[in-house]
Image (cartoon, rainbow, N blue to C red; front, side, top):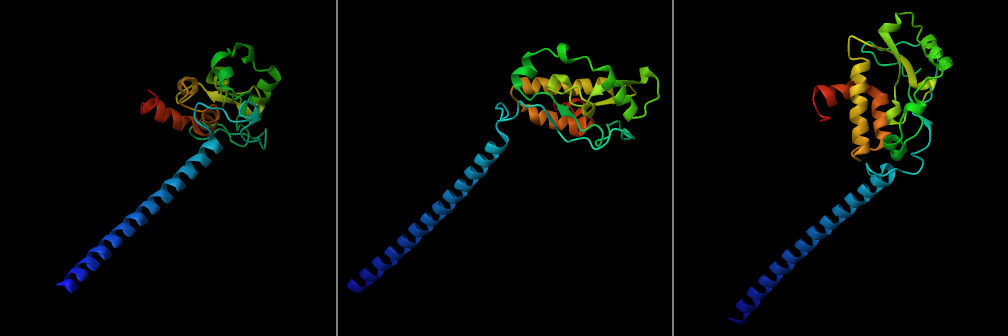
Length: 206
């Protein structure tokens, strides 16, 4: 009887200890996983910042990518500017300036820059068929530099009017704190037509 009792106690204690060790092991793995995710999230936040928070240097003027040429430029088949000529440039990424300062004082493009943009693309069409436009618009902090200007088609679309729709949506998202200024600038400079398809045609911007 004593042997059976001891045998039962030994079996029970062994089973309980095994279960307890297994639980401890699972909790340890869970803790390690959570710690890893927290570390990744912290690193991402530190690198990119929250959508509503500017990072050091965000307010400075900069070129998204430096142009490598200013002659022999051609628009793509769908109407995007030549990235080698018109990569986009930024005057400011300061949310307060973008959302609270009117662009009227920065609107006029110097005549010399206007003519240089025409010359770069060898444009000889009717003045009604195109408009010298900012790749990164002024309302998103864009600059009046040659790297940010190209003769954009006025139609058939997508053209000037469709790009204006994208600009207004991104400006609204930036000022509502839903999108970081630099992200908006990068996105519209990369492929504004794809943005128009997503935000306007598919309605993701509403």
